[in-house]
Amino acid sequence: MITKDEWLLEGQTLFGNNPLQWKFKCPSCGHIATVEDYKKAGAPSSAVGFSCVGRWLEVRKEAFDDKDKRKIPCNYSGGGLININPVEVEGQKVFEFGA
Image (cartoon, rainbow, N blue to C red):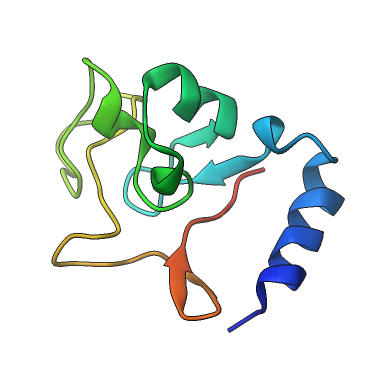
């Protein structure tokens, strides 16, 4: 587990001071989305780095669907029954930063 300050510092180190450019990788489908992508999709700010941006897009695939090989985001939610978010920030599990 890391502190929120450590997590924020890591984000700034990787992506700079503009949080809209920070990237997160969905642990289910591997899609990488910026905070700006979430905003454009109409996702609430609480979803950023917690649920896949695909939940707010018209075209998406099902989470955990290994048969669907499309390179599009899925409908995974960290708030669902299966939480595979790999990073814990002060008790909250979130996505890892994207490359």
